[in-house]
Length: 500
Image (tube, rainbow, N blue to C red; front, side, top):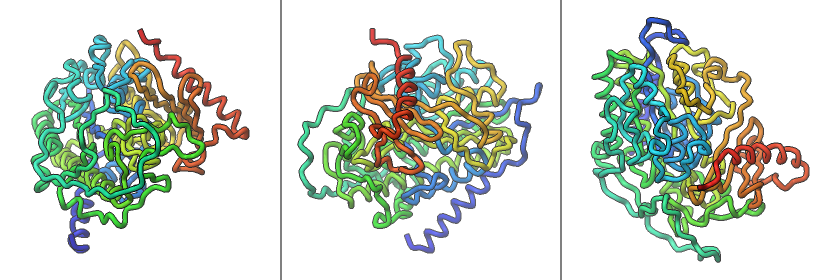
């Protein structure tokens, strides 16, 4: 793609994104009795880390529609998922409860079967008169909630066909792997052979399920615009294998892509980091093999191209929302199930990561009329806070079983307001017990492995050490800080019932 063509392409995307970010009018912050309740357009994306324009992408990711959405609402800079894996994270987010309460610690446990009486987020809207509509991946694949949806429940949400051709990244010879025995992946981690594949989609990606998901969302908007709706739109990419039409790949020059300072060719435990913090085998990309710098840049290019294509699909849905004149009475949410590592410490996946890039995830809430719109929030929040936030914004009573998150409405009003709740993330290797617990406070990131940290701990100062290179956990100068954060993680871990 020539530079002139590239600028024209980006100008077209940015113009559409700007139009999509401007509501026709601003409504009241709280539903007025007797007035129509606000709609909810709920985007949830798979494996999308904070590699977005509005999050200061190190790799230069081009995401104009998401960036415009951030300008129309509040961008939460420090939002954390509760588990770096699809099913446990989504089960937590969609029920408003911690993994220690759901008991969902792997990809095969159906939260609906474990908790048949719980009211999920879309189910709450359905039970209060909303059209609850699903397209794409909302709950984990094959584990949909049949009680949640007016329309779209139980339909396939897997990867499907791609409608394109596959590029195989040429292998390059590298030094032999370190002298450890590679353990098999747990059963709940998919082992699809995606580590060497990049899928180039035909046309605009019409043959891919994500394109169909956006089309379905547009169809729902047209058919349900006259009644309050909760529309869940789940997009799978940039989940591996990375997919994008050629024109999105052409936006990026692999030679200009930067690798992180802690890049490694395979999973590597740096000095001072507990070995329990890094799994010895990747689960998504470069499974069981060395990644050269050249290969790494090609895969990162494909990942951010896939992210740009997802942004484009989101833009198509937002454009229809605006064309129908629905934006000024629709709360738009963009959230992600978990983060992703792209070569940091040699890791090319999310599974097992309690590092920043494995657990920090995008969250944007654009609620018409909120005073904080157009600003960023730097308070640590959690994805399970989304459920109580939407319930309060729409004037819906919380479910009788109670929620464990906190409504973010105060921060939507004042993004720099007081907020003292830490954010927690956990990981389990066996689906029964906790392997590690991480906590993010205003100033610190701390993770502890094994009971009472018997397998080590990590303490980072994110402001001074954003790449998590200097573990302060064993520095006597930070002993009081570690003791305080360790007490938090141990109290959190104690909430998980002992295995039966």
